Length: 241
Image: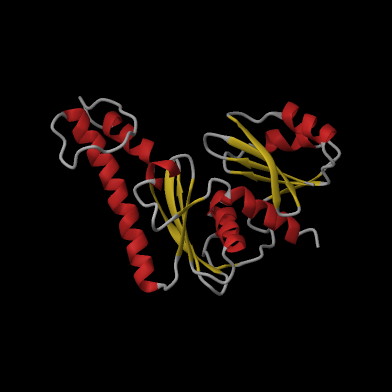
């Protein structure tokens, strides 16, 4: 059995896989060695893959050494089941490359656009030959609300909700519609642009704000909140051959 630990910007996800089948998962805000220890005693875990975008490996690695599990930390030197053409692999977010591998595992030999809607929103593309061509980074939903509040004198800090009006009739609605529709239009344009350029495009949306787009774009996307851990598990499997 494989243990996957995906340390994201706001949440840490722990998952157990039997080969490529997801058995169970949990998430916490901070690293929980007690949970990992409990799982190691309850399940026959042979190896683990850790992806860390918070740069807390120096904290996690010593804790993991106390558990009898072979641990691999994902970095730019880790062999991948795809070809990575990113010019600066050392600066490439581990969650981004893992999500692309997850998309490739779900849709092999297909053009795929992975949209990760979290603190930042990322757009990453892998073509049908298995080459990751790169992607773009934009402020995420909550980051946009925070920016309007932090960089203006009077605008309130709001949270995302369903956009009910195209044109705001008061300041709160103006912010809700401006941020919400702005991001929706951005995502729709990315999807239409890549769909025109690459036939039979598969679009996968993941991340904490993925559900914001699910009902709006439901006919053209797959919402998969586990695509990143699926990719991490695939990388681990390929490195254990």
